[in-house]
Image 1 (cartoon, rainbow, N blue to C red):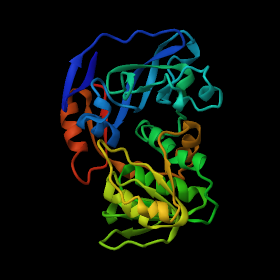
Image 2: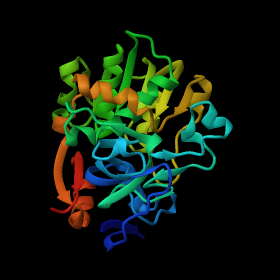
Image 3: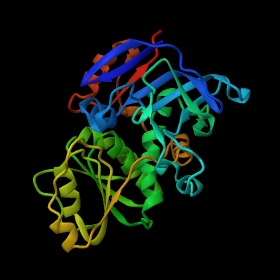
Length: 319
């Protein structure tokens, strides 16, 4: 089978044997997968990564000891956890100290013709959600994680900085929750994708509101963006950090210390919270796909995904 391999910044195509299927696992044929900002950071050296990336995917189960899964169209939770430690018993397998992570930490990712995951990680994709829409289940779940971590009252003002893919999804998810979301970004045409649900949008210029929002989310992917997010937050407000960046991030810590601002790191979330939002149309993703490539054209796909202004780029199995 064909698989994408990252090595010292290079995007390579390699032939690999079919992955074996351990007890409790399923083998899944890739239908479509999305290149996200984390994948691009892995290419740049995040985590010292070498291997097959990819964690936003939808596929069809082709082999599994539990035959009820065969033929099911699925997406999957990316953390492979032990199920026995204190974190797993609390339902926080994403923090299991022995976990591996699909396409990121010690488990080959979805950018290959066939991948494997435990069946307990799988979610059946409803027929009403298209395959391309289903690629977004994982990043929508990451947006939903904010609401599991932070109690945002309905009607509360929330600033979201960054109009990339994740920022657009976060704005929609928080607006669907009942918050009054104000999205700041540099691309008016991108931000228009959120206006259907009532999100207020503003083109971010040199000056941004200061000390105005009780909750603010950084999804800019830059230390400057994180600093701006902190500056927009009222004293004793909360900043949710959603950017994945390779290397050190520098901010003026005097602002969150003096203003007693809470900084909350946030990563992946529960897919069972995301799927209904896509199914109901409260979160819309159809305008967020910029291009599609087959796996054998992965170097082109990564180059396209890294181009400024480009949104989601999809990889599919070769015809």
